[in-house]
Amino acid sequence: MDEVAARFGSDDGCVFYDARHDRYRLAYDCSTGPRTRWTLAHELGHIVLRHLEDFPETSITRKQSPVLLGILDKEADKFAGEILAPAPLLIGLAESSHLHTKEFYYALSRDLFGLSRQAAYYRARTIYLYRDKITQHWADAKPAVYRKHMDTFLAKYGGLGPDTLAGRYWMEKYSKEYQRYEDPEMPPAAAGE
Image 1 (cartoon, helix red, strand yellow):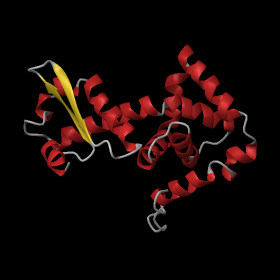
Image 2 (tube, helix red, strand yellow):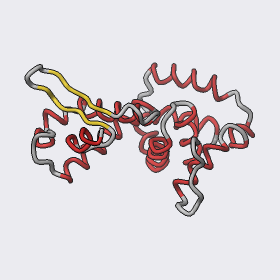
Image 3 (cartoon, one colour):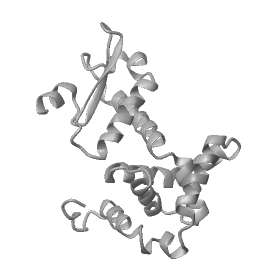
């Protein structure tokens, strides 16, 4: 695995286009648990966003520009976030629960969407920071599929009592996890947490 990671420049995964066979090839570390889903969605983002075709200089066989790779990776992360934990759904649940907090977005990302701690933290901070822009974007055009999913999620989580949604029950462990990211002075998470 170390050899593959060194060759492709990533411990988690990478994708490249195999022109000889006219298909994409994806290599990833399947031992990363929940993080594997983020890695796969991230790499799919590179394909869907046409990074490999539009920016051939990022190919693993060519000289890579760190600045360009950083931009493309941020785009792929945004794609992964929207695929795995759609912002409009998280915001809709937060608004219906009157809980616009980073911890609430984190807890939903972990509990409802099954994201890893790192991915949920990234997602929670992004949504918290850009909530108004995301909400404005969706205000005029909430497609039927969004409403359908929102109804399903509200049915699952909306029936919880105010004390539960406030974090006294299901959200408590996630709030503590989130705080560990926010405050580097906090003791590390227990093994297996």
